[in-house]
Length: 360
Image 1 (cartoon, helix red, strand yellow):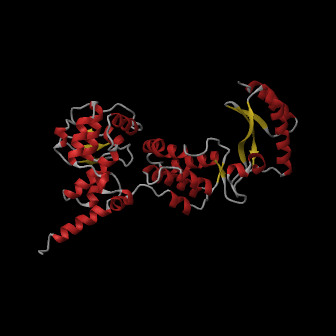
Image 2 (image 1 turned 90 degrees about the vertical axis):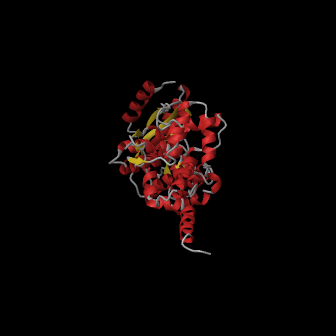
Image 3 (image 1 turned 180 degrees about the vertical axis):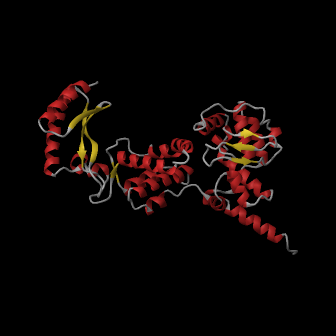
């Protein structure tokens, strides 16, 4: 029900009587709009919405107008309290703790994200849709719900344990929390997810299993993605936007997660064996291709995940004698991340090479 024409008349009457609070409709609910004190200590008042918990119905308008007058009086006399209207107990926010609304948290996220990608807005769009937005989707749906450290920790802990999602999305929530002044140590600890400690030999498919799985994939464009991720260790969105070079190297597009780079195949014979230069390429949006591909592989009864192909590529590079710094460049991440993720294989490789110099 659209009450906006009637609300315009009500708000004109309120304003004429000196009331600085107006009634607003958002979807099927009514809110009060005014310059409210910030929910975050030490920041200035700002225009915000206060939920009335009233449906947008004709029968709700008298009550909404009455509450607007009461809240206006509270604001004028300095007795307005968010806890009175939203309820700290229901929101799990302890008195005196730093807290912000979900709306303010999202605004801080947008501001922080923009500052990080001033020089690469296209890359920023991909990262926002791929990581930042999924992280923010974990927050409570109401913009007026208060967030404190304890609630943010519970949100992070609600993500799958030892998962890349908890690591990546949790880290984003930590960054935003830090920008707002939260104590982030416990949040950072909670966001530790998938990493070197969780990567085991069981996660690395053999070359034979990769080839056998390729033959089980039904649709040719998903065969192509599987083959390219296997042979080049690419992330799915990088594979889809890559370009062939004459020597069977691939050039990854500049607008991807880590920017432009050239990548060589390992194993090189897979380029011909998997017919990678002739199979069709998926047409999905690069931002969604990983999810759609995972669904397709699941329908084909395949349990290996695309990220496991990337790990297999890294281990294969070690076995071929490629140094860790060059492998990191080929895979599009920092040497530090490469060292952290593949430390146990690096150490094993160094030990093996050292032992080759001894005769026992």
